[in-house]
Picture 1 (cartoon, rainbow, N blue to C red):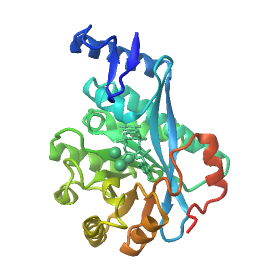
Picture 2 (cartoon, helix red, strand yellow; picture 1 turned 135 degrees about the vertical axis):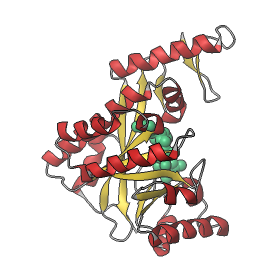
Picture 3 (tube, helix red, strand yellow; picture 1 turned 90 degrees about the vertical axis):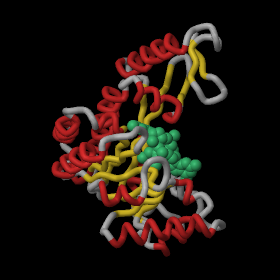
Picture 4 (cartoon, rainbow, N blue to C red; picture 1 turned 120 degrees about the vertical axis):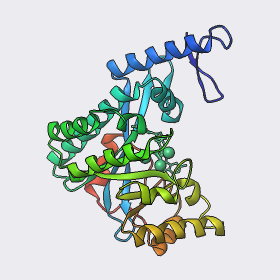
Length: 281
Ligand code: C2E
Ligand code: MG
Ligand code: MG
Ligand code: MG
């Protein structure tokens, strides 16, 4: 029997009845089976131009709808999918699904939108990742300039190898963003070391932007630096009108967060596609 433990970890069987190794093998199989049976689903969160309040595109976010476990959020299974490398076929499915969705919207007349897709560094390390991306773009008739690859540093990676892969992805015409900037392994030196287009400020700094001077100073410094070297800046976790206003005044370009919209299912996106102004400022 498979169940989710309250503490945030996934458990198969009662705690202690099977070894960690066996549990991992079982969960790995469960993940693989789910990729094959398409138990995964994507939600999309609107991104907004902070100056014009226009919709610029969406970020695709994966959900696991397990028949027994219910809906499992990505923070609970992405780390395991990375460890077991299931993220490679899963990531390919996610990319193709997101681009197929964008193409469907294009066919409906909703053109010039961008789709941001999260990639694990494990995926980027795959030898054929650039071909996989090029092929997906071609299959779904999407212009490379409409794709943004969002990268979070979760494991230590070889900077030179990563740089080279990022450059190859950009050579296709797609853009590359550093996700969750300011946390984990990512730091200011990244901007110099990795040839990215966009910096996505982690929501930890946005959350208390209106009451914490340190957060405001950090965001201000990131925005100033990014603007100086000509990078696009996106803030995630914009939850209030004040967040949006402060970010706009600091010179941040794009915003994304519950204030504009939660991640939503494709049918709910139609509202935003038909009313391209998203902010209610
Ligand atoms: P992320 O890429 O940084 O995505 C943003 C997360 O913040 C999403 O959580 C989103 O639902 C949440 N969020 C957006 N606006 C707000 C807000 O205003 N307030 C708060 N509190 N949260 C907000 P989600 O969907 O649970 O995803 C969590 C993480 O899982 C993602 O962080 C990403 O690192 C990973 N992930 C999600 N989908 C994928 C995927 O398709 N592939 C890979 N490799 N990783 C994914
Ligand atoms: Mg992201
Ligand atoms: Mg993020
Ligand atoms: Mg994140």
